[in-house]
Image (tube, rainbow, N blue to C red; front, side):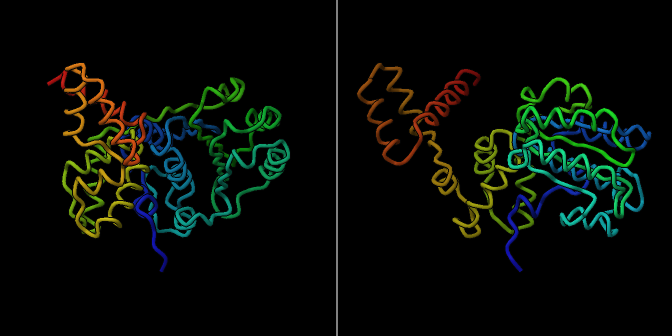
Length: 295
């Protein structure tokens, strides 16, 4: 069996497993329970925070044999097909590579047909802001009066690029960056299941490096676990992530405080020669000064 990366292996399969987006999952659960499911949704927010994952769970909740239900069983054939990505009724479209009017015209023709097995056909268009203006125009009529068996979910990292005419026809949900605490707790649970020995400082470093993206944090944990072979130290993580140690940050801060320009430039030059990104060094230094100011 081929190796499954952490980001796929530990992808949430139910609403209560989605981390840091309870304001959205609760609303969707209530919409299903009250039979108030809209025909089109915009899921907007940073990368790796659960937009496409939530869309898949929502599609599963609508089509589960027990449903529509806010708690899909993940055992029936319909749920399993959606989990495996083989359902003919759940169509995931990459807006970046299927952005022209011809693709949208094809979609408009296909929405007329009833679902093959489930209750609804669900179209999940990722990075929808990449569609051309002509493609958006072709989508308008279908969004305005869609067949009863069709639901649209548009995911985007740049909602401001989606035309207002599209936004006005959708219910919008804004996904948040995931907190460092939530990311650390999730990584700790994965590390336990994978029998990895990881120091808390390492998990915090990974969480900070991911900038609120759970997927990025899981990818980093996966990468570092291969490098460290079971036990992950702060030194190992710093090497992989290109992080700057506290000792160096204190030395750099002292050079700046004492107006020792030559000393500061020497430290920066050493870091650059090690492959550190200068812009990243500045960000680490800003965070270091912020931490000092609030202590």
